[in-house]
Length: 213
Image 1 (tube, helix red, strand yellow):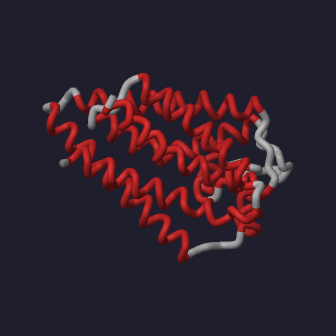
Image 2: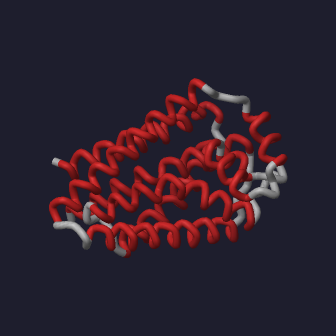
């Protein structure tokens, strides 16, 4: 039961970025069709599976206690990096209109587009159609998974791997995107969007400390 609650705690932390993305879509009235949600889910689970496998393989090379502590250190470091990135983003904030125009300039360079979406999820709507297409949902899934790669690797090293990790993170991400879209349509709740990354970084730091000590 403790492991299950740890996984739920971890899946929630990794899904808060998805909540922020969904919130942005709700505010901008950007629609995500069912097919695009399916692509998001499958891509997310595939990337998490790869990270879980690599983390588990690395854990087998170390004694159990040390692999758990090293996994905790990785989670703590990633949590701190998320918090530092959030602070930098606040200092170097740019208007969304400028970001959207820039991403169109890089529409043929997939890596550049993913970086732009990573910085601002609204950029996933490359053609400004108000709908996230299948191709755009794939780019969004890759961008949302950038942070998750290292965190899932660390969690797998700390003993929180396996099929349940893959399923919970995939399902939680989709659930949080849906919740974000729903709440984002209510303008008085706009302040919630900025709380997702902050809470995610804090939760990862807490989980990392629990694994270390």
